Image 1 (cartoon, rainbow, N blue to C red):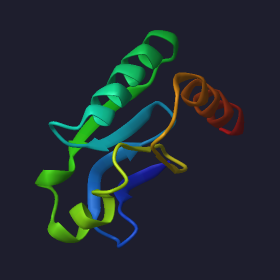
Image 2 (image 1 turned 180 degrees about the horizontal axis):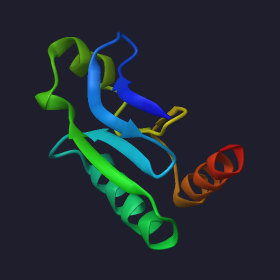
Image 3 (image 1 turned 90 degrees about the vertical axis):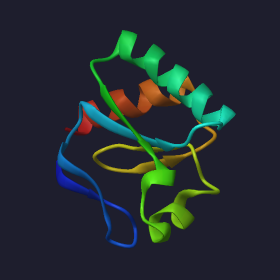
Image 4 (image 1 turned 45 degrees about the vertical axis):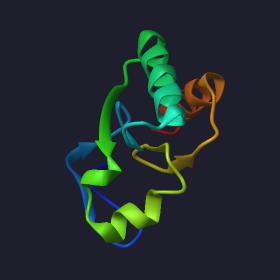
Length: 102
């Protein structure tokens, strides 16, 4: 369990617990792939008890923005980062796999 979600450069992205049931999606407005990822995560929430926090990278400091701009959407769980492309089957498998490891 992470108490604070940090970017690879050590900047704080999310404060508070990021555990098995809490995932973060990094994206921005006017990003079609981010919309697809959000829709997938909504579908995941129907099958698994996961809480999603959406973060707009445009509101982050430039050093973090530049780190993620070409990688969005990026899904961050309590154990890993997952870059696009990903699909619903992978997300369910990731959730179930982390549940088993938990």
